Length: 160
Ligand code: PNS
Image 1 (cartoon, rainbow, N blue to C red):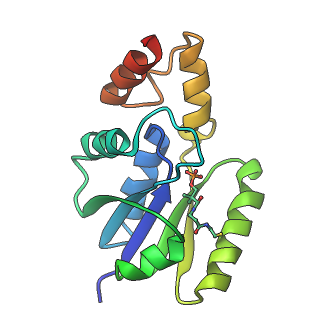
Image 2: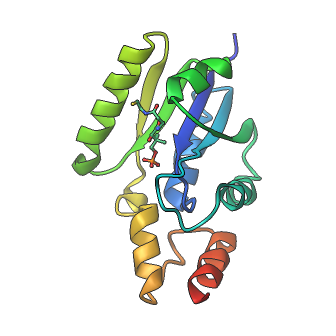
């Protein structure tokens, strides 16, 4: 049986922290589906299509990946893809409570789906999509937190 995980998130935009989790996740899973939640309620900097493009560009050298977007419950999406697990990255302790709640709720909704957490690499401990957007919007240098293609798109978007 192939071990398949869904790596869900907003990816608005993808960062080196996400790429690190996927690279390490591939050692555990044969295939990873990187999936963006299509959430009209959450105001995003990039539309889903552009986020997908950035993911594809940034992870083109990693094998065994597919890219998608989904609506509705994550566990339903996981089952629909024939996957067994949800992959999530955990940064500082501040992530823990939210991630714990999410994992427990997902387990309650479907006991067949397991959540697997990978600790973020030390280098990416303080990297998050929100913080890089904020820093970039005030002219801060985010070049060591996102790949060059993303950097270019963030700069272009914020200039408008
Ligand atoms: O990158 P994010 O914003 O931390 O990702 C959050 C995400 C997409 C993993 C989470 O919001 C999610 O799975 N949403 C889909 C709805 C759902 O199933 N929620 C959990 C149980 S209520």
